[in-house]
Image (cartoon, rainbow, N blue to C red):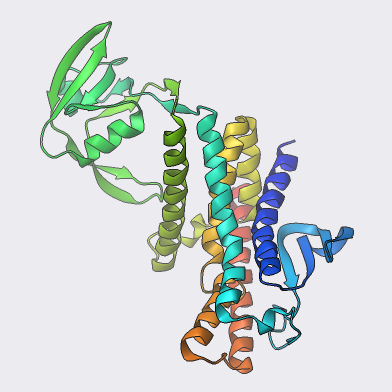
Length: 350
């Protein structure tokens, strides 16, 4: 069941990405020849709205083939009025950017749906107090609930951690213990911790662990929009940062995952309920949007790069240059896919 959900999620995300290209192309008057989910042998095909719609055997992507555009041979062109080639660079960029844009829009609506479902968040209830830590010295105990820090109300463990990390000097904690309200004064210490990329960093901490208590996140309608927007921006920033750290070597290439990891994580999320599936689907949707904007010729970002060149210099890049860059792009893309697959197999074997 988990595998089926994984394939449905991946196919849905790919469909929305390609739907962005399709709708933008049609809006610009471009004839769309094929809309395919998957690659390879076609398993199911039908014609509708003057386009051939297909589901193919290998569900690892998809494509919209427009008249006059052929990624396998960028020198093949058509100059008919309904061809991609006769459109202005700005129109082409609009068509190319629509795919990633739809991924971001989809992620926003997925996060919006999550917020409407009152997702569980970790409550600021203390579980473990580390010996000789600032919290221990100040007299904090297990099952204490932190209500505020320096007069700022705390409603979740994440909010509490951010306030502690950003604090300057001592902290005035208001806690609830056994029905009574108490004040505790303490000063955080810089300690070594791991961030989400596995890097060692220095972070202000007070030496407590969460009790694992959760409560539903209840938001107003306006707050729901803010939550969805903030989560979409957070996911985009995290992915950009992760790619940057991979490029400069701060994060080892062995941390990179491929389609097997995506399928496994989606399958695992499905066991935790629909909200976990939506959250992971939103994250992968943002991932698709961000990665497709990178200036690799085999991706949307590469095509946008060529059109920006034409827009700035008032001429197209030469066919020889486009062909070389396209081949290099496919080599990079297949190399990254191969590395991700290799890492996935290593993790399965390990």
